Length: 389
Ligand SMILES: Cc1ncc(COP(=O)(O)O)c(C=O)c1O
Image: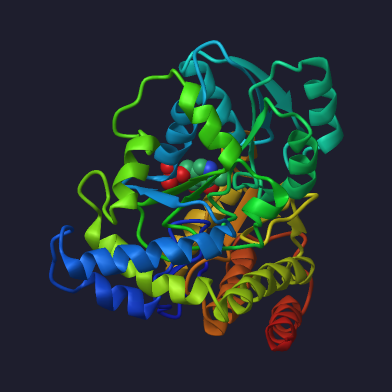
């Protein structure tokens, strides 16, 4: 197969892990300090304050030394009891994960099945809650990363808020820090994030915040827990400490990346992510590809490849020949989509190179839908989008 390898530098455009900011890389290389030192306690205090800004909450945001799934588990065991009835939005692989986990913990699970690539209709949640008033929690993603689809979380919260005995538990792993999430104002009860996403860090930290309502659930939650016990973490945090050994290097790096995710830079960072998503959607047509999702997310875009092209093979070709890692599709989307992430330290140069690489790879695969002059057109579209404020 013909290739057009021009010795491209390595690029990582996946929905996590993501390219690290140069300042984050620098701090990760610093010598270790102990977590029970005034120096680290200052960092912890600063990080805790800034995380509240990212989540838009007055509640403490806790860090677990785990991947995002650890914080998902923490959300379940800190708020619920065996046998509790729960509703789980299942619109892709991560909704399936909520359903599997809640079942494993002995909850009584009703899946709310949503066609892949579509957002959930809040009215369907409302209907279920009205018919099943004993429902203790609704589980959903903000962004279902496997289909690159965003759910209307604010509208879902409006529905759940009307039910005093129901929590809204939100996997915002590819959303918090990437789009506006107003935890307190919208009434989200549990919000979860992950370090290898918008936080621009390596994998290894997860984040979780509980509303007052969720804290009140925690008092009667009977699922067993030890490492994930947030009530113990809360006591330690009140003393300015973490309950267990802290992931010192990651938290020091987080202090750096939070500068970009809070205060005056917060909206600039969110707008940049939105712009990269818009630009990626805009080049699809020029390259003869289709945006897969009916409700596309800002953090990741799924592009459907023509039927004749196995996106998995295309993805492997792009990685091997052009040094660019993208993601393919999972499960029923395997071979059908390419997923491009918009989180982390992504430069304009990376975006222009991605257009060029996609073009050459599609030409190598003799894409039947690749228009004439596709390269010039797609580069022009990307240049225009990147120049748009
Ligand atoms: C929406 C969503 N939920 C959960 C996860 C799982 O996170 P982790 O792999 O960090 O456990 C991911 C990771 O990609 C995700 O995108």
